Amino acid sequence: GPKVLQIPSHQIIDMGQMVTLNCDPVSNHLYFYWYKQILGQQMEFLVNFYNGKVMEKSKLFKDQFSVERPDGSYFTLKIQPTALEDSAVYFCASSLRAGGYAEQFFGPGTRLTVL
Amino acid sequence: GQGVEQPDNLMSVEGTFARVNCTYSTSGFNGLSWYQQREGHAPVFLSYVVLDGLKDSGHFSTFLSRSNGYSYLLLTELQIKDSASYLCAVRDQGSALGRLHFGAGTQLIVIP
Image (cartoon, rainbow over all chains, first blue to last red; front, side):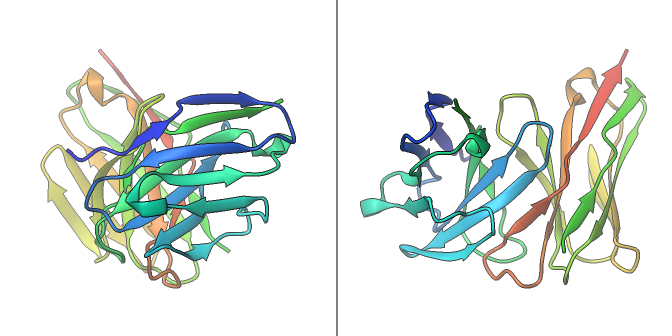
């Protein structure tokens, strides 16, 4: 089936540094999402993105976070500067349509460790 | 607030069945999805339900009761490879683009 890729699979950085997480969504999908999962907890919605704009974001999407998809390439999540509490697995997802029946396809996640 | 609850663990015997329960309390409801996730891999979509009743999809079936805020995923004729984490995710009514609220997942272990 369609696959979402995420690069890198693991990233270790020092607190205060910038990090960019990359997502290669399913090629004809139009809606993009980031979710955050802290170890042992449930996956939580961060943000969704359509037509070059952030449509919805949660309280977890701090001012230090930003997303973009320049020229239809990778959908990225940038954190600048990083904090210790940003350590988590970040999952990217994409869907062809919005709304109830639109299946979200997930990537395998990027494990971010902030030291 | 949004609350989606699932039991942490479930163990069943190969060849039998397993029922993974999910209860939710959300501000509005716009459907519930089930995903299967193996360690280190992407969650894989299994089913979406928005109407009450049982939806039979062969190896996986799903049930929904909106008045009770309850759903279950039923796996029949279990195989060892069905051992995985099963995630329940609810869409709230306020999200036009499909913001999902996940439970913490139920780890199913299928034993011989």
